[in-house]
Length: 152
Image 1 (cartoon, rainbow, N blue to C red):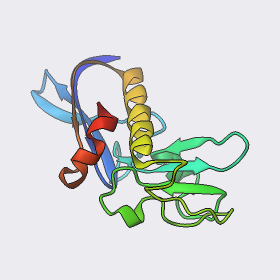
Image 2 (cartoon, one colour; image 1 turned 135 degrees about the vertical axis):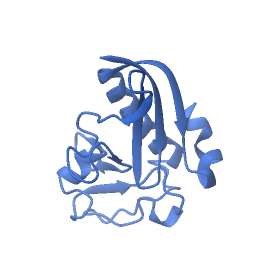
Image 3 (cartoon, rainbow, N blue to C red; image 1 turned 180 degrees about the horizontal axis):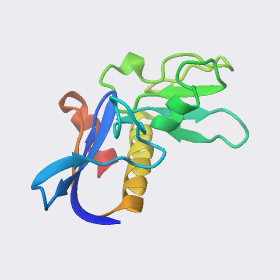
Image 4 (cartoon, rainbow, N blue to C red; image 1 turned 90 degrees about the horizontal axis):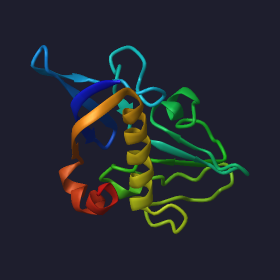
């Protein structure tokens, strides 16, 4: 595990984790296991997306897990959720296999709970690869107040 100052930018479509490289005196994108794109143009970036599986075990997929499993584009029994998207209609608004419509006001998955779940997954994964000396969190300005409590 690397010891470093870390910054996490929770974006509407992508989340980026960066660490400060003391030796080179610059920031670098840190790839998180299972959550980050593994290669290509988006390597290291984390898709800011959750998938809530509506099955007996109710598994929650996050980041690249959603993309890798093809859950964002297929009609699976569950719900896609974009916790930091400032367009509320996009937030988990499509009906899925069981016809249940999930939204930012859905009593089962409130928006702040989705934010907390996504942020927790990112921070737990971060903890597995780095010893965090200091941490800076950022979120989209137009939705920061909505997320301030969930991130604290």
